[in-house]
Amino acid sequence: MRRFWIIRKPVFRSSFYTCNSFIKKYYYTLITTMTDNTTTTSLTVEHPGDNKRLSSSVTNSSKQKTKKPKLRKYKAKKVDVTSPMGVLEFEVNDLLETQNLSREQVLNDVTAILNDKLKKDGSITMQYHREVRNVRVLEITANCNGLALIDNPVELGKKQVVIIPFGLPGDVVNIKVFKTHPYYVESDLLEVVEKSPMRRDDLIKDKYFGKSSGSQLEFLTYDDQLKLKRKTISNAYKFFAPRLVAEKLLPQFGTTVASPLQFGYRTKITPHFDMPRRKEKELAERPPLGFGQKGRPQWRKDTLDIGGHGSILDIDECVLATEVLNKGLTNERRKFEKEFKNYKKGATILLRENTTVLDPSKPTLEQLTEEGSRDEAGNLSYVEVEDKEHNVKLAKTCVTNPRQIVTEYVDGYTFKFSAGEFFQNNNAILPIVTKYVRDNLQTPIKDGGDEPKFLVDAYCGSGLFSICSSKGVDKVIGVEISADSVSFAEKNAKANGVENCRFIVGKAEKLFESIDTPSERTSVILDPPRKGCDELFLKQLAAYNPAKIVYISCNVHSQARDVEYFLKETENGSAYQIESIRGFDFFPQTHHVESVCIMKRI
Image 1 (cartoon, one colour):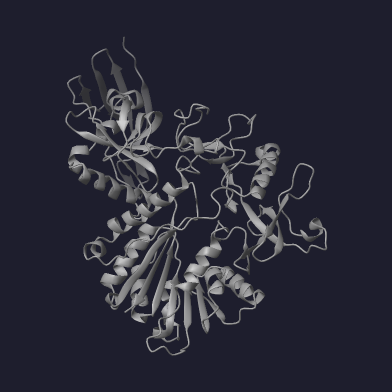
Image 2 (spheres, rainbow, N blue to C red):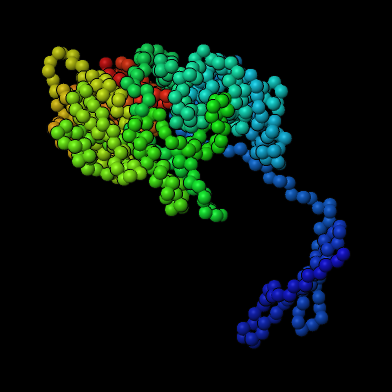
């Protein structure tokens, strides 16, 4: 069968003679003849004034080389080495060392999976992503996932490191591998065949445990949780401060300080929801409102196996949150049920606890003048509690507006701040922490004289540690990059009658350029964000050469890195000694631990 397409249109103008107004015009005729075996294309160029034709023919035969598909290459993402992904690499290497394996012996062919023609249903992918039975968990990570070794299904003689959520050392489990990385694979826990001596499933209170990313340790006794967090701190210094370990410059790690509350302690939660990017039709039901999903809870026989990794788990209560926040969650879920169609994209809902000191002689509701979450009848939700230590009665409400001003009471001090700004989320343990910091800030006096003492609080926020540590020192200087936080810090100092605090807006990295207190009589508090301190700041800190340093960290891995750099790489670092390192359990039932490192000049 022959088919012809004839197309006529201008192709070019060969020359222009503007003086004689003469233009030669050329056209082409493209004739394509298609047969079963070959395709022939003839290009005919015509001059309208004569019968001359110039023809060329191009034949594409079946012998012509076909272009090979381009292979996809695996590109590793750059991660902060002190982030969970970065720490995992250290943990995998540590496991391999204890098992006498090299990285090459557990290397997965991720390129083959990327180029598997049938993708998820491809033969290579199916071999890697399979069920594996009777796997013994060997270790537990800082994120509280189990680590184990399984046989590589494709390359005989090789092993795979597998991550098992909710797996404990000593467990024997059945798993389903679902994702492959170069040096490890991820899995779902399907069944616990043999329980670890540590496992106490009878302690689980949360109906979402095993599925939600909110908690990881409810199946451990609280004593075991504290021991595990002490090990996390020890491993952090092992991985990120190896020279301090080798030179035996680290003290014995202290026991992790317990939280007075193990449940119902969180004063802030942020449930969220997603919306489809393109709505083919109007949503009939509201999307899930809650927290990220960690895995499939098939191993928990009394839970439904719905959703998947990366999806949002719909929750109606949070056992870690305070009572008033759970009331607020109920209110906001009911409100969201009516209003979800108004949202074009996903969002996060803030639930923050607010505290009011009550006057016993007046009705409670008359004193709750600030806005908060309301129930179906429009009444403000609140909970009354007693502070027996300070002999006051408090009312707790739930705030949802991130710009609203909230109040908290810590160790007898009042703190106001914007609901959306950072403030510690476990008020039960805060007085213990502030006392520990205050007690360790005392400047050593060599001659026994009563000399003046000074305090510098880097990353001071709204003034928590500055104000709580102000007693017993002559002057406190707090530095914070946020002007709003500094404004709150100044107001908080005034409200608490603290007159020896001064707050400065500025970067902590340039902090010591404006500090005029004598370094030999000054202590420094560091409470940086998760990424820790940068090298420039640590060099300036060492050059300032304070008498004592208290480093508070929500990421012990960046803390360990910073402490080693300070002691080994800075000008005066060798003049310091680590007095103590210990954890504080701000977030029971989770893998998180805060670490406080005390260093003094010797």
